[in-house]
Image (cartoon, rainbow, N blue to C red; front, top):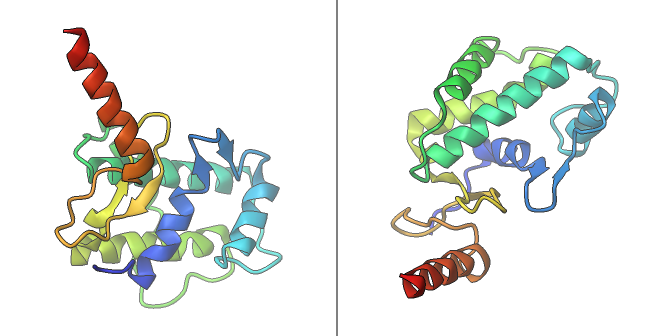
Length: 170
C-alpha cells in the first residue's frame, strides 16, 4: 500500500485544520490562532507576521484544497470555489527558492505539495470523505486507489446502513 508522500503531509494537515464532524476550526480565533497553528504544524517559526488578510488567504486556500479533495472522490467542486482557488494560487508563483519570512512563504509548502501532487498524480489519492457530517480528508492507501470513506467502520458503515434503510422504505 502506498504511503502518504512527504510533500503532501503539509497539504493534509492544512486541510484537516478544520473538522466538520466536531465543528472545530483551529483558525477560528483569528490571525493569532492561524499563526499558532502554523508554528505547531512546523510550517512557520515564531514571529511570522500573520494578519487578517493572511487568514483570508489561508481560508481560501484551504477551501479550494478541500474542494479538490472532494472532487478526487467524485463530487464536482463548485465553479465559484474553483475560481476563488485559482485566484488564490496565483499569489504563489513557483520558484526554486524559498519565499522568505512572510505569510505567503509559510503557505509555500502547502502550495508546492499540491503542485507536486498534481504533477505526479499523487494528489488524486487525497480524498475528502463524502459523508456530510464528516468531510475528513484522508490519504487513500488502498492498492487500487479506490477507497471512498475515511473509515469503512464509521462513515462507510453509516452510508451503507442509510442506503439499506432507504431501500427497505421503497
